[in-house]
Image (cartoon, rainbow, N blue to C red; front, side, top):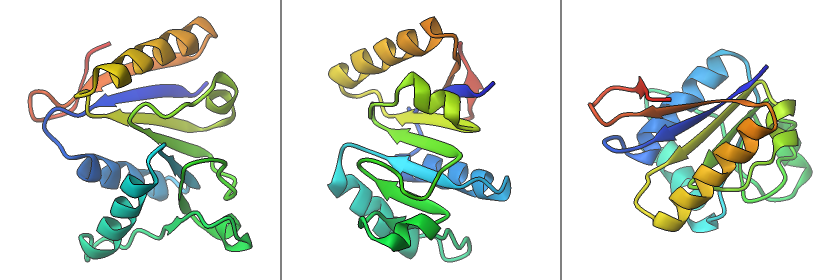
Length: 150
């Protein structure tokens, strides 16, 4: 059964944490969807992945709704991922439902925790997922390294 892993960023940047997860997921031969409610943020991540990762080629594309989306190993999207992902990475409290979690091999939710409304939404998401029988873990980089807290 898949585990929904909640990553609370306290020291690392979202981009750094995301890059690490993307590299590990690609190495496991997973097709990835990165979902956010914020298209501007996804565009910044798209630019960052192309310009700040010269030694690590991370093949990705910002969703355009075209047929090309289907062939992408990593698709950055605000909605449906047309690349048939087996790994879903949600950013800053984006909606991910129980059925989606159950259909994936890997689910990660990355958040910075600075926004009280996002924290409230993530706590509710944790409850909904665990009440439905999904396994969940909470990790924090508070000490400078990732540690499982719950």
